[in-house]
Amino acid sequence: MEDITQGLKETVNTDTVMKSWLVNYVGDRHNPQGDTVTVEMIVETMAKEFPEFLMAIAEENWVRGYHQALEDIDIGRQAAESELELQNEE
Image (cartoon, rainbow, N blue to C red; front, side):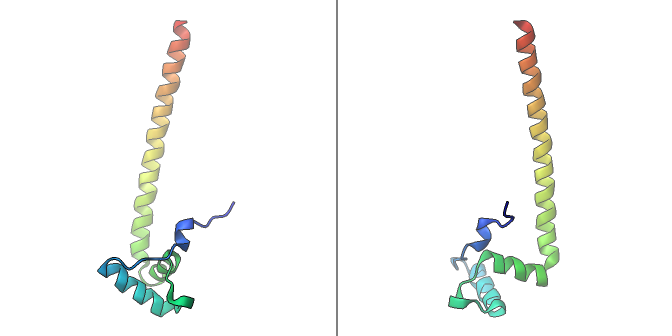
């Protein structure tokens, strides 16, 4: 299984002022062929130059995923209990 997210290979469009600035900044750092800046290049640049920003996002993402997993477990438990009750009534 490959660990690369397809979204990392996407080219970033400069449809906002911030994206335009960021694409230009990252393009200057990476000097890509064809002047195409990808999401992966931006992530690499952010990891080197602003790691605390990416860590805050990663931590938030982890907490949200963990919370969702706990909710899924609870819903699964409730569904299993309901199914057992239905089977016991028969």
